[in-house]
Length: 62
Image 1 (tube, rainbow, N blue to C red):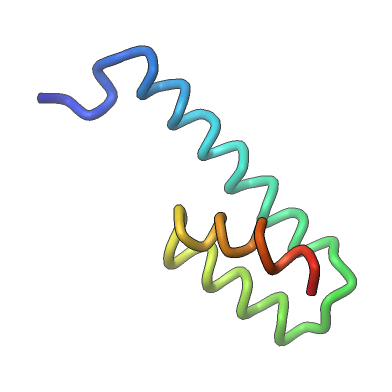
Image 2 (cartoon, helix red, strand yellow):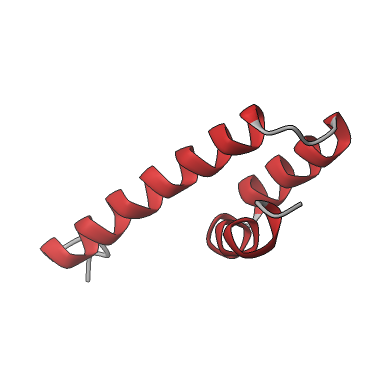
């Protein structure tokens, strides 16, 4: 069974990629200090789904 065999899976994958890139750019352009940016980048890169959720829920407010 192929993971991206259904159209719904493709839509979810595209949404995830768009949010992933958006989060990385938001971190880069934010007013956080350098260490915070590096830590958030690491979290989002190492844990793509959980990292995105964490950044959206608590990282943007920091």
